[in-house]
Length: 232
Image (cartoon, rainbow, N blue to C red; front, side):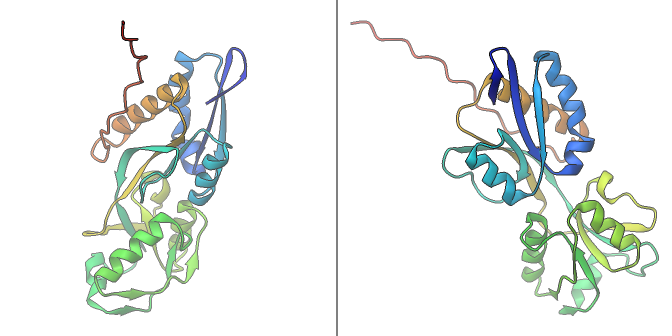
């Protein structure tokens, strides 16, 4: 985190539009209790953008999928494991996703996030492990858009099991048993300021309260204490 002036701390956070809209306001309220003059900058975007912006110093902290270890001066901390689900129109006859895997090749329309997104890559990785071929036919730019296209009867969809993203009376969510959950966490660059540390702790607390069954209790490293000088 940087300082805009001498006594007004600034935190620049990057996350998906859904996370910024539905989940960050609660975290912000708690953070302002400790930092009343906080200037919070919220930037929506995608995984690749966040990684670039962290390297370039455009943002201080990003909420991202953690598929690989942080590189260079970046650090990371896991927050939550979110299961993947297969969304189907409510009237679809299928009741278990596993019933689909009995076919080596599926011709059903498939809606998912962009192919380079973590969710889509993870889904197809496990699908290949099962020996099943299924071609993505429609690319959606958000989790909510995946759900809305499935609700419109345009096909089946791959999504995260986040209620705010998949809630629709015209859709059913089928568990993807045996598919790896998506690990979501935080990434930042450089040394951790007191403000950044408080933000991470507030996010951890929110995740534990909101998704207790999925939360990951990774310990945040303790701040380094200045070493004592050895006496001669």
